[in-house]
Length: 283
Ligand code: GLU
Image (cartoon, rainbow, N blue to C red; front, side, top):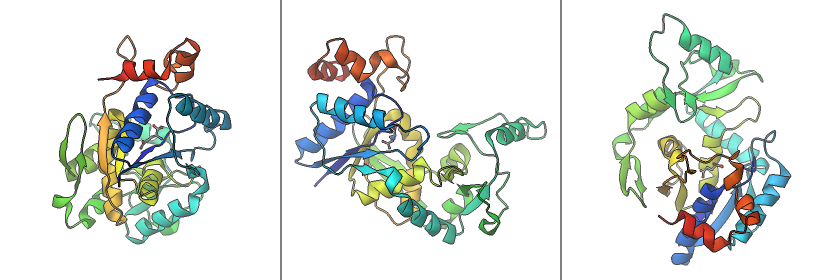
């Protein structure tokens, strides 16, 4: 049986692009008598707000979607993220990092570095300033990073690793060590403020919820190799992925949470129906 999920962060109102993701996942599940789950990605407790969570339920109900309850809430699952982090620490692929954004920017602009700044799925690629530190030296002011070189080296069957993409660009996507090392770099596994990260939590929870199919926007595709790598390190199954095209506004800009005009509730207030949303996002 297929299990799809929609995993919004309650840090703003859902917009047309979120609607597209949720409808696509829901329809795919229903078409195969599968399950559709909802997950609140609310690890960022400073930015997550109960009113946005309530609005998500309201907007999804308005779209005609139904999901299983109880809804999994990431803020209640720290022990699971800690356990996964410990597993990675025990594998020797983690190090503590005290660098602030400013430290990283300064180190990258230092003349001896020379190389142009590279951006990955999490922004600037970390210059590995702290990579020689050991986990025994970690303090509460440190984040924890994945040593991507060590992680990649640990996978002896990397040539067979990858994931199946369905939807608009279907096919087998092999994991590329050079993409992971050079274009993703040493990503954060545990932020110093919240003790986990999106990458770690999403991988742990997709497995915990037995998700077979991940449907999300194409903006997430660059991070998927990170997720597949983490799945392999943690011996978790890799779902099938569908990265759908992004919905853009009239000027071609990608929608963001602050895009109030195309928020589902703004469209609803303007007289749209759920069917109008489906028509608007139809390829
Ligand atoms: N919580 C993420 C977001 O709001 C979704 C990521 C995912 O679907 O994996 O964009």
